[in-house]
Structures are given as C-alpha cells and as structure tokens.
Image (cartoon, rainbow, N blue to C red; front, side, top):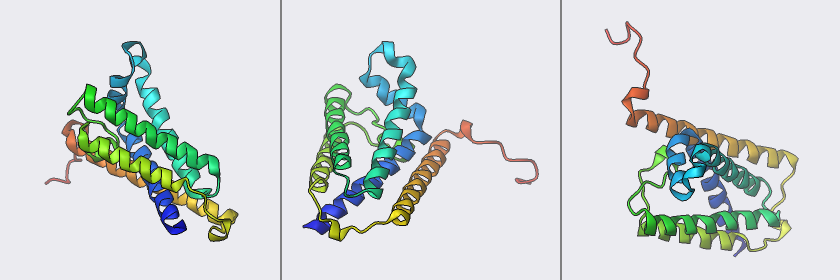
Length: 184
C-alpha cells in the first residue's frame, strides 16, 4: 500500500509542477479563465491572481516532491485538488464548453463532465497520497532533496517551454519573422 501512496504522491506532484509551468507560459489565457470566476471588479488583477495560482501549484508540487514526509504538504495538495473539483464543477454548470486552461496552451480541454470526473479522480489520488508512509521507505538527504527540487524546476521549465511553443503556434502573429536569407 505504501508504494501506491508514494506513486500517487509523485504523480500528483509532477502534475502540479507541470500544470503550473504551463499556466505561466499562457498567463493571459489562464487569466481569462480566472475572470470567469471573479467579479468584474477583480478583472484588473486577474493576471496577478492567475500567476499566483500557477506559482502556488509549482511551489506545492515541488514541496510535495522534495519533502514527501511533511504531512502539511499532503493536506495542501489535497486542498488544491479539492479546489480543482469545485472549479471544474462550477465551470461545467456555469460555463460549459469554455476552455479551462488548466494546462495553459498545452490543452484545448473545456469545462465538461469529463473534466469534473478527472478532477474527482485527482482528488481521490490526493487523498490516497495523504496516507502516512513510514520513514524507512524514504531516506532523503539534503542532496536528494535538492536534486528533486532541481527536477521539479526542470519539469516546470519544460512545461513552460512546450506551452509557449504551442501557444505561439496557435497564434501566427506572435511568431517572429524569419530573417532574410533563411527562406531564400
């Protein structure tokens, strides 16, 4: 059972880091989703709120990956995943078919029944990941933790780069013109 708990913990941590990195690359698109859930008076700060959500996902995912025995992190992950369920359900009932931008420009998924189901499965996995695991299974020293933090940074950077590239591909106007000589 401990192996399943650790597998769920790692999978969710990586997912959070990747989703946060992708959101940062498509901050304006994700801010559009944020505007759906906040009143018009907060529309000016939607980009800041979107950045805060993305950075929180990266921070919590990194903490979960590098400090697997920290109990508070498990509850932070579970709280985020439960929030995903609420946002998916509200989005499905209030804005069906609208893009959720949960992975920035990496996906075209929208608020629908499947998104609520995926968020629910994620919350169930987060609840399983919150189960206590014996310290004998996890012997991480300082270098091991730093390696996991570096790995999380690499995941976030890769997701950011992929989302930025896909977002640029969707909007040809954002692509720089080819220098003369390259196309001749």
